[in-house]
Image (cartoon, rainbow, N blue to C red; front, side):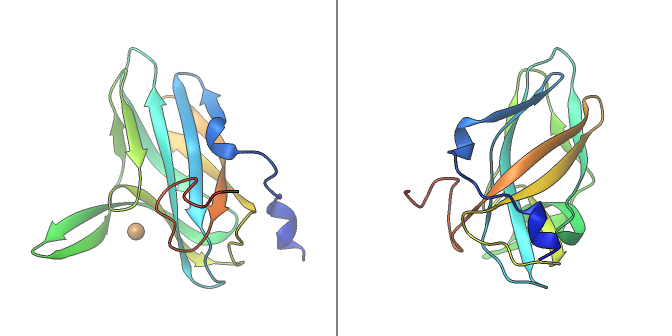
Length: 150
Ligand SMILES: [Cu+2]
């Protein structure tokens, strides 16, 4: 019960909300339902509205033992995940973390990710600093932030 306090119920349509910090705006943060001790994936869109390049250099969440930034690379017919040190955010550009591409990997979940709840994540940017977002938990297998209608 102690850790469940971190998981606030989602009562509003989170994808409509943008979390802004300096020149960085994060929209539509979401994840999928996953079991305790399993692995979760975090998805969101990051817009750099500034005139200077920035980089996403790290992320953390209290619900996972380790949070990594991953990309997918194609090896023949197989898509494999690989950790990356950072994601480049060109000035005026938007980078979307989505299934099959960049994503946050939440490794060693301390609690299950339950559909309808939200998971706090702290994103760390080279220039903009820390940005707090809440990942809305969608059903297991969801392909987008609102793949499941409410
Ligand atoms: Cu991954």
